[in-house]
Amino acid sequence: MIKLDGRGLVPAIVQDADTGQVLMLGYMNPTSIKRTLEEGQVWFYSRSREELWHKGDTSGSYLNFEEAHVDCDGDTLLLKVKPTGPVCHTGNQSCFFQPVEGDQEYEGEEEGSGILEELFSVIQERKVDKPEGSYTVRLLEGGVERIAQKVIEEAGEVALAGAMMNRENLPKEMADLLYHTLVLLSASDVSPEKVWKELRVRRG
Image 1 (cartoon, rainbow, N blue to C red):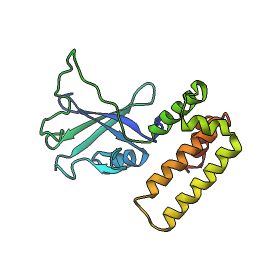
Image 2: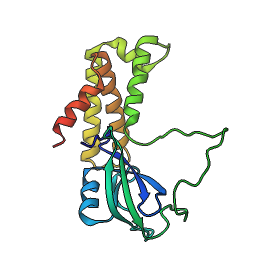
Image 3: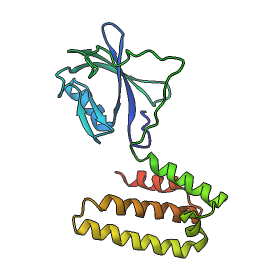
Image 4: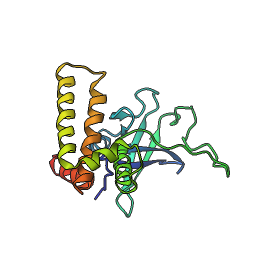
């Protein structure tokens, strides 16, 4: 059993089958795993481009697949491969060539749908702390019916932007809809996880 994360992905450690050197870390989904097993070269899923990625198509350095294993928890893969060239885009044989220092700098990830969970957490904080001047607090104090009305209004704006093929405004209107929907969930004491669970049921 392979366990997928909230985006339907599983991390895959890539190791040189001959030397044992760890070469890179990528992410795979069921389709990329299937292609890797069937075609004999490694496929990943690019989180930034949100599409399948045949490693080597751009660089010419392919990963010839030898074998795969899943760890004891079922949430990480180990791929043993024979690379045809340097694996890292920098030209290094391995992506792991930078030492970790005591004064290491850190950077948070700003991509993906995790922002929804982060935003809901902020909404929950506003619900308790009630900071003065907060739009979220005003919405919550207006009651569920008012919030539901805002959701209807924002859904209309999304539909209009889509119908008009307004690609500039559509993301903004969708962001408004998602925000107000999360506020509605909070006001109704419903966790987003219940929505994610329902979507998982429907993804087939």
